[in-house]
Length: 466
Image (cartoon, rainbow, N blue to C red; front, side, top):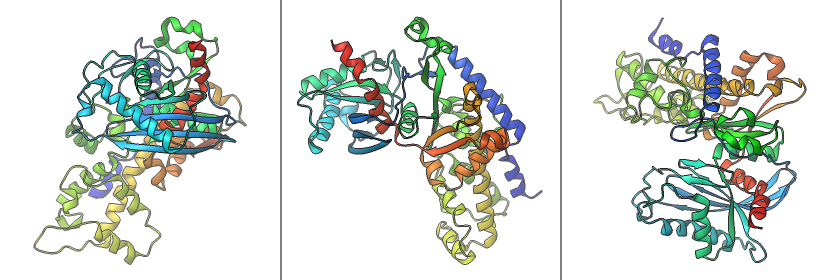
């Protein structure tokens, strides 16, 4: 067996390994559902969203999405028939911005000023009533209802004085009052839950929301009766009620059932958070390129690749990106001369001899990319298989489609990914069930999903105000 074959074999995912992951994930679902609190590094977090749209709703609703470096505010006009029109305003917040480490009020005023900018720029009328807004708060929060939650430690460079333990909706409400902006927060949302809701507006049969981009996560509807985290709140729901769950699947996985190879372990050992998010490190867009780089370096050292010359593009961690895997694989139909010329343009060599990549180098790198990406697709497929099996009712009607909304650059921009994921599901379930599975590109969860959840719970807030 050649060095390349050995490496490709180490990225192969057997049916037994696939089964171990499906079973391992299902055990983690049950463990998370039976954990009493959703604090710290929690999984299976209740969203308090128990409704899905029909696709016929109309009206204009707002969404605010605040992350590590960007604030985005959207006005989503629901047009019915699953159609939407989105207007948005974005503002960046550099790491050096004093808003990150100052008082609470200026930070919330800044966000509310951005909302007001959107209202004025797109001439949105708030003279007769307030507009409802969903907030995607990309930081830890102890959520206690669809619109209430206490802020936990923020991270991502934010250290606002006295913010821990504050109620998020109240802080927004006070800022809206200070600025005389007629908007109310009717939902706090997780973007993965938002993906499922956004796709349900397009297709009400959607049962899984999956993010497969730089990172990964999933949401699905679970029986409220199984959610220990709700404690006494079970009595507020009907016996057969379902609630969307944010799985936090990105932190699933352990040595007990993940088939980590030496490149996975090397990547993890050099990561600033070792032994954390092991599953995500094996398959998400943030890491596929690095896994290829590490494997390629081993082949370079053995003079199997680039005749032993290390390209400058391989000298730094994460310098080879997942988009380059897609680029290499997607050129297979081009003429060899064209492919080789493009391939050579991707690499520079700091040697006395100007090395020119060969056809063997091109083939080797393409096969490496295919092996790493195919395993990524299978790992995504294993997660989806476990999410399907977790919902027993999906197996009751053999004519009903199993609709999965997927959002994220790795799924959307890597052309081979959808077919490879579907192939892994076909190998697992067989043709009868696989014929029912529909992998569909889902729309923006934090924006469209946030606005939709705000719409679904707008009347609840009105009732509270009475």
